[in-house]
Length: 349
Picture 1 (cartoon, rainbow, N blue to C red):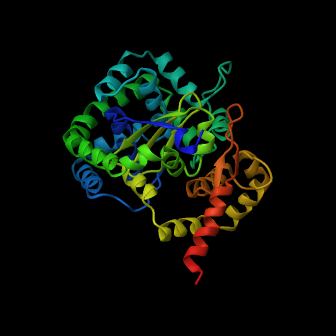
Picture 2 (cartoon, rainbow, N blue to C red):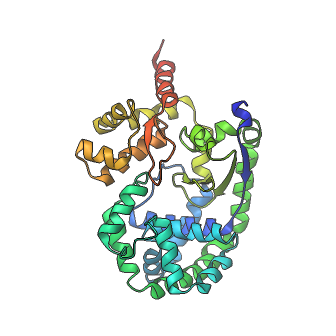
Picture 3 (cartoon, rainbow, N blue to C red):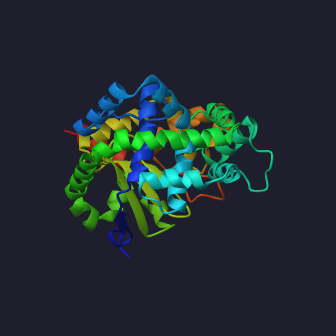
């Protein structure tokens, strides 16, 4: 089987996912947390963000930040969307309203990957251990995430109610009026790359996932991809139960259409820090997971996650097949070879 035959791409629009990612991105931009802003925004996404910042009240901003202050909330809402096969924002609101407190807490426990038999888990130390073990691939402050989640879940009914209220006003005010823009932008993005999607889906997956098509192929030959229009954030990959890739179309346009100069710049920036070079040297010999790297180098897990994320986004390292609940990393020979090739093309006479 050739690489081109490995994947079937299913491109899906989903307004519920658009809403969740837009809300999270708006909070991240306002608080300068949890996002990677690469500076390539379309006029459509800039106009949307400017409109939101001008019209949202301080009270609404406070509630939006309360609900979307944690990455866990975004992951949980995506889990709820996929669990119930939801596509419309009102369906998410209705699904949240139908839950009781225990179902809500159990769902959050599930996405954090706390072992099912663990009963006394809603404390900072247990959550930090779970994040360091199973969310190490994310660049985030685990202690802050755990602290915020413990505070929020002291009153799960209040937190769930705030989710419902925020989504109930966020969608009609900040997503629904932009549906024509969202549809137009996603359709234009798909049309722009239609030939590549059909001719070489392996390359599409490889570029969107920073060189991890080979790993994803071990799980499924069918990949659901969800383009979102109003944000500019790094690609999100959900697996191993099913492969879902959620990406900003602005970011994807950059990844799929990157020229040699942009690619060289990104690769050089990725290796510019001595700590990242140390990590690459470790990964050339065997697979490591983030907590191991942190212990070996004497760094905090959050610092290692930051460096690993930059190397991963540049395609210089890749995910080895997950073992249990851990993501192990290894050097990506294709990425290293691309670095050598880019430098040779840029600077050879």
